[in-house]
Image 1: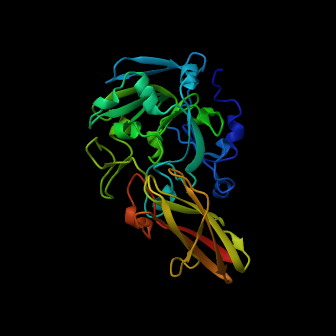
Image 2: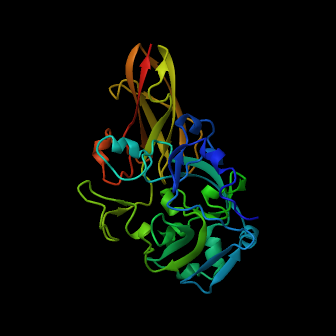
Length: 366
């Protein structure tokens, strides 16, 4: 059936904290992220760089080519008829928690709190299956190849369409999908209907929506999104004029955590308080989460709850809070023994990417 981006969209937008309406960028309140380990599609953050394209699934085609044996053009029905895989994975915007960096000094981009993240069941063929169907010879795979995605959405205020790429090794990994289904239902328009890439462990920018074509090539995509944007730059570097060889291209996401409950500014009763949140690490396991009721002077270890490879870990902790003002803090540790920086000043950059400092929430206890 045809895609209808406007249908029910205002109702879904009303559920979220909208940072921009055009392009549409929004995140859920943090307490809603803790309602379910799998995030409902209507509560999943939305990151758009331009329009929400109207695509008719009946006439949709995905073009696959490049350094392959042959070109392939697939309908949505043909994609759905291929062997299907479901992967539970967390997607996260590279600008998640930008608000914390913005509090240090001005940065560009939407002021995301800690809600530019979500976890879902994604279903579709593995990307490697699609490449193989197009004649890609696994035996001849060589280093230096990349898989580039071109999409149907036009970047806001620009004359080009969205595009990005990933290294071939990640494209061939079993967790990397072309998804047409999210939590058992067709993708919503704002989440990429009818087809998107899902690249677990990588920043959301590498999981493009509204796919138009896939190309295997000997270099990263030259689309400005890939070549110039989403670069982690030293704090003194001005993002204007940044090129393909500057900065660190953001791919695998770093260790992060956030307090979802209680909310900032909450008024609590004295005594035992439950603190809940999430922790996530791109391609490594979360090993421990610590929670503090006094800004990091003393810590208790949180109880780790449901988790999965390439998905976030839910956690909770009980702490005693006497009357007064308190700064709650959370920090995670990964399987390599790495933890988060204490202050956002340590990783501040002009684009506001990769805000991973201890998450801090001030509350009042009566």
